Structure formats: C-alpha cells, structure tokens
Length: 259
Image 1 (cartoon, rainbow, N blue to C red):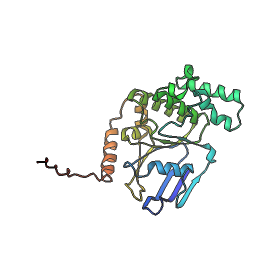
Image 2 (cartoon, rainbow, N blue to C red):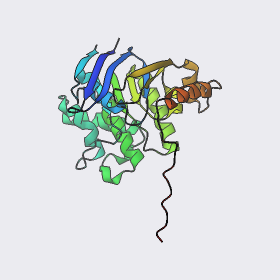
Image 3 (cartoon, rainbow, N blue to C red):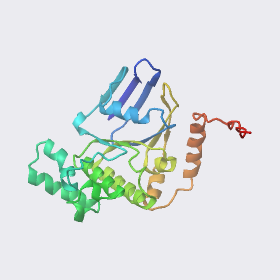
Image 4 (cartoon, one colour):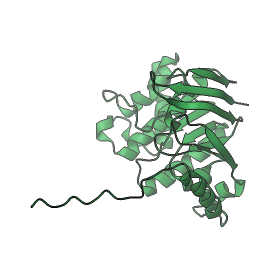
C-alpha cells in the first residue's frame, strides 16, 4: 500500500470540520481520481497528505519518503524571474545536482513536452498550456513515486488538454508513478483512472464511495475514443454526486418596479 489515510479530520478555528473520518487507500502504481462537490475539501485533502496543512486527528501513512511525493497545483507555481529551464532545474539543484547536469536534465524534460525551443522564455512569455507543461516537467524531473494533482488540466483548452493527458499517462505508466488526482470532470476521471473516489458534501466531508474503472476505458482513451460502457459509469457517478449537491430550486421573488 503506497498511501493509507485513516480517520483524518480538519477544521479551521472553531468552525465545523472541513474533513471528518476520511478513509483513503492507494496501492502502488494505482491512478485514483478524487471527485466531489465544489468546496467539499478535495484540495484540502491533498494538502493534508502532502503535509502542507496539519489535520486535527487521524493518520497519513506513506510507504515512501515525503521527498518522493510530487504536487502539481491547479495554478502553476513557476518563479517569474526564472526562465523555463531554470524553473525545471530548481528542484534538481535543491537536491544537490550540479548546475550543468540539472540544466541538461531540464532541457531534456522540456524537449519531451514539446518546449525544447522555449527553454529561455520566462513564464510571462508563455501561454497557459506552455506554463502547464513547464510545471509538469518541473514535477516529473524529480522522479516522484507518488504524484498528487489538483485539477491539473482545468485551465487548458480541449486539444491541449487531450494531448497533455495522453503524455502524462505515458510518463506515469513508464515510471510506475502512483497518482491521486482531483478533478471535476467525470469523463476525465473514468478515462484515466483505475479507481474513482467520490467525496460527500461538507462540512465534515468524507470518502463516500469508491468505484473501480475497467482497464478497457483507459485503453480506449489512449486512442481518442470512448468505450461504449463508459457513459454508464459516468451516469452512475453523476447520480451519486447529484445527491450531495443541494441547489436552490426556487427563484428569488421578482422585485416590483418602483412606482
């Protein structure tokens, strides 16, 4: 077992708990997507696992060193005063790699994501999709064994998003990386994952259910097609998710025009 979360709880101040009795188990080599209502605590759970936030109780057990955990944020965390090469090389240098070797490694990663000719550009000279690819290179260059991702493709257009997902799946499979990804896209979740975990609404959110995803779904996704059984699983997830989303059904009363 790569990751084991038990009885995790977290609250802000004296307010109600954001997370309560969270149970999550992730096997080595597994790709799990985490879905749930907006604001239920999915991103908070990732930060707790990473050690960026301290919970009120429970345990997070990792079978690896925390240095082997990578975190890909929804918004890129690139340093604006460093070019793409130096942003990717930063983590490698922090781990003791020689400057020249780190820059060569960074160039190799940038080339692998199609940015080989843009290594000298700064973040403000890159498009959103290009910055995302730099961020992915920055994380994967450290060879993480566990990768936490918080809606990594949400800001990308459909075409770039598809190619980035395909490339990421290839890197994950080649390096045997275990992945926990937060997403709001149910189709994306069942296209890339081995399991989809659904969180309840807050306050006091928990893992409500976990659904196994047939391997054939990912195989179809890699060819750009949709497995005929995939919409059925998406519909089941949506039906369960809908029970956790309480939206007001009554429109506010129309204000009378002033006389």
